[in-house]
Length: 112
Image (cartoon, rainbow, N blue to C red; front, side, top):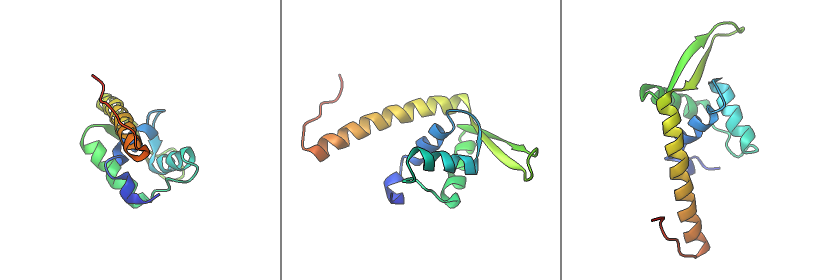
């Protein structure tokens, strides 16, 4: 999948990857890869800047774990991140429904 398709959706994807619990960066990449059968195979150069941005925004927090052979930074959703994920899911549902209507050549009416 082309990276430009993800513009505006990467943050929501990262929040969703953390919905099941804390993960380190590479595990987040693996979740996205596994849940999409390899269609989303994002490089670390895309993921880590976005994780740092989400942390600055207060949507995720991180801690360093040193109980493994290499210290790892583990990310988790904050309360604001859980709210952001709900909002992202709702926005995606509406966006994908609207785009599908246009692509399929059928009308769409906004919910009242």
